[in-house]
Image (tube, rainbow, N blue to C red; front, side, top):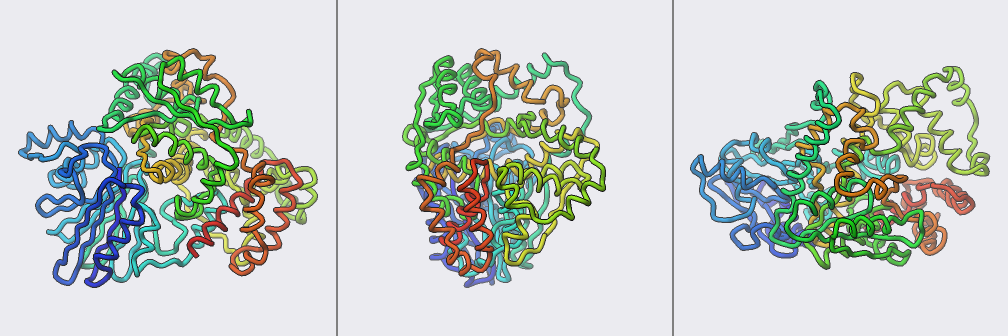
Amino acid sequence: MCGIAGFLGRRNNGNLETLQSMINAQVHRGPDAEGIFFEYLEDYQVALGHRRLSILDVSDLAGQPMTFEHLTITYNGEVYNFLEIKNELRKSGYKFTSTGDTEVVLKAFHCWGMQAIDRFRGMFAFCIFDQQTKKAYLVRDRVGVKPLYYSHTQHGLLFSSELKSLHCHPDFNKTLCDNGLQLYFQFGYISAPWTIYANTKKVMPGHYVEFDLVKNTVEEKKYWDLSSFYLKPKLLLDENEAVHHLEKLLIESFSLRLISDVPVGVLLSGGIDSSLVAAVLSANSSRPIETFTMGFHLDEFDESQYARQIAEHLGTTHHEQLCTAKDAESVISHFPMMYDEPFADDSAIPTALISKFARERVTVALSGDGGDELFCGYNSYILSDKRFDTIQKIPKNIAKILNLLPDPMMFFYRLGYDRYNRYLKLKSIMHLKETEDKYKFISQTFTQYDMNKLFLRYQNNTLNSRYYNQLNSMERMMLVDFKHYLPDDILVKIDRATMYTSLEGREPLLDHKILEFAAQLPIELKKQKYVLKNILAKYIPRSYFERKKHGFGVPINAWLKKELRHLVEYYLNPAKIKQQGILNADYITKLWHAFLKNKTNDTRIWTLLVFQMWHEKYL
């Protein structure tokens, strides 16, 4: 696991010192070593940098950037089936000097070109430069586990694992992106390809960007899409056959992710997904598994007792830590540097703390991310499906009447924010036809109504959606989450939190063989993780995991009203907000006063706080 950065373009567009600054900005991603490739080609220059966290082949033979004939790579990630690919390449005459996967990825590309990606099982983001064609390729894994940012300028291409590295280049532009701003305040994160900056993008999951050094052109191309597997005929499997086949895939996927030359552990929340990872690994590993859990003093947020019970049953070497408001503040102060753009998922707080805790004992940690999006695990899928049916039956003239009603903000706040928020979302989705659009609206932090009041100048930028009318409505919602919430919230959270502490995070449920199989399972076998529960029941008693679902959340609202109130009062100061000239200070003050009076699940103050902290750090 590593950090990569670089730039390609006209001569004298950045220099060796620029590249050094770019890789130094992400030393946390690779504290073990660094490498630089800097060459002039006629009127052009190629600068590739690398920071290394040694996981496989910790010797200098696996150092990067790595060159083979006309190809040079700087690579972040793990291709877990590299030994299988290596043997295949050997049959074609390739020889190897290292024992890691970087050389395999490079020579696979040399042998098969872009088709090599089809053979890779893993998580990766890399840049390969071809000196013969003077083209570079920015490649991101199928799901988007590993980040990859790029900025195309009049002089060339900049890229990096993290936005902060791009700041070091003189061509980087900090102009805010309207779409990025809108997405952040709607959902608390920014979906690819957008970023918070107007001239910078994320490489989309399952895509690669082809850059022509001579022509200074970029073209993004798709090489994999889970949607195509949802659209295939469903597998004709009964319950037992589905359990047998999926368990076989899980054992294979999880075992591949144990490959490491350094210690490995599991982040155990006590939920179904992480428990399944710990259970399968414990049953199929020759060495004891180390597990790590984060707990809270408030029972409604604490699952540590369940994790402890599961760990004892599996016989893992278990470690626990409690998260306090003081711990939370220590993490929140690092949010701008950790995420580089506004990111409001408050579960990033315990994720960062448990990553730091685990790093004291291991260098690699597996998690259970992805199970909800693949196996219909969120309660919102079933609840939304029922609500959408009900809303569909409401007469259209009722929707017109609701739109004519004046602002009911303060009236509804007397009844509670939750009622007010439901009212606004009801108004918003009554005129929508597609399940995807309805689901996006109910997931919003700030509704369109809020956004008009929040911004001093607001223009609604409608983002494109893809519709799959032939799919079950719950599968359509799962696809929305798989393409947006999973890669741009969940995986951003785990990657930045782990890498900030130099810990490699691995997500074994996101192996593409599992994804493709799950997409073709009938919804009855996936609903509320039915097939996963049947597999987990083979390893631990059902009573250990069949309970009300908890999120990996924190008592953020309680903290903001008490222990962390000083942060809100500093960053949401009306004078500070007015000086920025972006948000409506009077409206934010009303939200703050209403927030203090109500015991609600209003996440808007937290979302505003995170933005203000980021803005002060970078702008």
